[in-house]
Image (cartoon, rainbow, N blue to C red; front, top):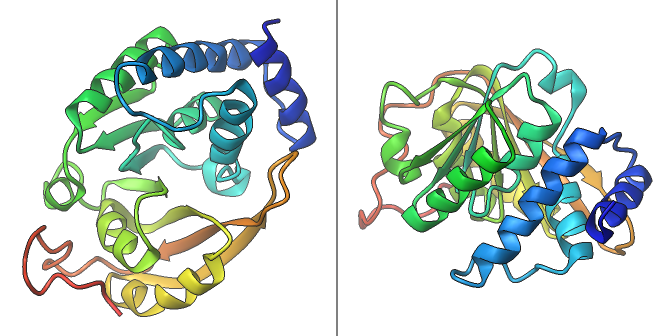
Length: 240
């Protein structure tokens, strides 16, 4: 095992995650590519082995809920950036078709290379803005699960993500210590966009003394046709 793989194995066990040898190797490939590409472009400020293992991979996997993921067939990671949380979830739940969407072409090139090198046959990478893609028939209301991490505060994030989710599907937002405030802020936006109540599941990362949570919203009815509003419109203030 490489030092990175040893760190990941230990920390994953502490987090209650059972990683296979193949999954650990896939994450090692991801780590190598992330560090290499980060020398050419800004993918992340965190590239130390402990940080990649805990703050990127294990943090992403805190979104996994077997009851939700077991019956799911499609997932979209909106504003995926370096592929987080989408790539770790694609590794951990290989039965789900995962779409990684990002607005920056250079990041999509990284994601495409990483998915190929990791042999993730259940991943596709799309270069698009959420406001535009969510209006396309091939994406609107097509996904069982939408996930997002470090993209925007919840009222804005709901507008970016809920249009992708089918009725009965779920949005999972990975949030930091201010999650309770965001949960309250997002209530009205969720109602407008077809979502139900916002639930919070607090999580802790091994070796870190901070508080994080997964905010979940179930799609109860279709999102009105006017949403998401197009970027740049004067009236495009956060929904409240």
